[in-house]
Image (cartoon, rainbow, N blue to C red):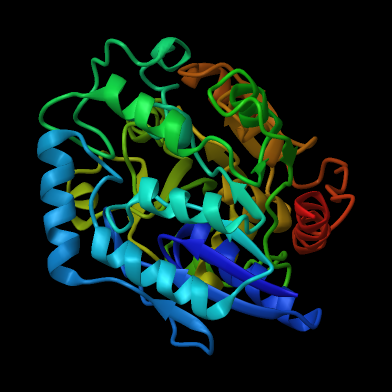
Length: 397
């Protein structure tokens, strides 16, 4: 089977790692696999995607800059990059895939109406994994943090601007209608990584499509109990250590919640935050050890040596950091946000959003010595998707 993956990034970031993992495991299963991606960096993070066979970076720097400027000025995200999208379509025609697995098509690199017109005409079976809510809103990738339900009514009045995908002027209702038209009448199966997002999708403009939950997973070759010597290196031998990790620390990821937690810690407790910018590290209060991005080995050591993992996310789908922490047998405390309790698993301690006091009680009570239930998926993620590709092909015939 010829499988084509389309995503904004490849090999880094949560979705880029997922696509690379799916590609590797589909090749191992004997399939002919291709990847198209269009960004080598993301907001707040610079990637380093490896050059691999049948993996194509299709982008034009000038067109991408024009796309970003136009999208931000006119609230027209996904409506530019026509020439780049034509190159992508030409590559699809060349490959002639049996199935296309789309992931993030937003990110200032692709014209979604143009691509959808081609997919509709070609009748190629499509599996589309929604890693956020962008596909069915008139602007935002998430709405939990702002407690907004306007997407249910066509995004008639959108109040939010200073967040991804950013804009100066608002035209959310127009965007909503364009998406509703572009994403109609496709030969498509939707996938969400959480039951929470599936429930949201079923009440959205995309509710007419079949939708399946396929949980993300992480490589157990990368994440397993392995404490290393970080406590000695950072002089934490006699401390109780709590850990929080993010690719980019924003208010939505719970940055301020960590600051609040730090103010409540005693002298025998430390919060380690991984993924901070140098500017954020310089301004940290007492009680926090700030670290910028670290490699997988160091990250595994932190997950494995902490007394508990704290995920204060205020909007999320199915955070991979919970999976990584759980694989390293770290007790997890998470806010009751989106699909975070799902990815944290049965061992997690779930508290209400913004309830730092309740989170601290659970962090202090957490112990690696307590009995754990093993979180086992019915099928590995790649097997679930391979079965879904076959189903999509059968439906299309």
